[in-house]
Image (cartoon, rainbow, N blue to C red; front, side, top):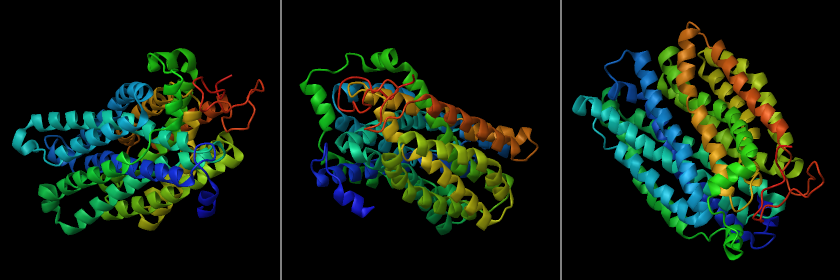
Length: 456
């Protein structure tokens, strides 16, 4: 991988150091944002049902906790629309700084929040409000980070560099899970419920400062600068992208739901499933998630590079097929209650997902013209995120319907994955140098016009 980096240049073969700096900054900033986001998912599975919904029985309390978890997903499309609009009008960099601040502050405040024992139902209300604010910020952050990385990158290796912000997702999960793993080991169960769970949220303040320092030193996207110089900005980006590229937005939603479903079922739902239903020690499940997330992190740039060599669609298709084939075996391994087999199940799950998720960022960016790219990519990704954010809640309900067996959940995952498989069949290849169905060059990436990688 290091040899690849050394051979790459900046925008259109320019400064290698600049591209690497932007990619690194995008990855670190995104890691911090997703650390904040996934803290909530881990806490929702482990403690929020007890601290904010203690009046319910364990299953209903878990359902209520996951319902508040989904509130963040519901806010993400709104954030994608708002920050996408200003990102296409004002610039990518300023939106990245603003979203980082909003997300970090909301996470820090959750760490200070009184519980049900102190405020009663108002504690849950405040939790939902802060979760909504955090999801709103994440809705604008992802699109900006991916755009900064891809719009600085040379066309030949755009998939590789575009995968760096994608690494922030498993890195954020890895970091948040690791912090929770350490905290649960340092405190007794009662101490953890009293004060220990707050520590990961309060640490967000330190990470905000690190992220701001890094992002303030990154230059604005050269592609967006050309849009500004040529005065080709869209007056209302979200309306224009829906009018000119509405089918691509729907396709992007479909492309996201498969890997998104696999990812959230493999970490957020598994924590509740393993600890509540299978009666496993939380540390065993957290360790499995840590190891699987590490595999996910390592293979994402490899999947992005493969998409530069073989195309976005073939790499994604292989991942979609593997995820569908492995759905039942993955849950069989989890149901074994063996820590080793559960870890193997999650590693297999992450490897199938990485082939889809690695090229996803650049795939989304190449579907839209530069003047509406922030809005289009963000809307497709975040609407998909809103839908898959319901999956931990749905999976918990399916577990009850299936009498405690996991087969309805595996079947549901296959159905969601099939949507993504059909979506990639309907979208043309977007890798530069590959001809579209009518023979036009696909790579109109720096132009203020829609990409040719559209549904035919």
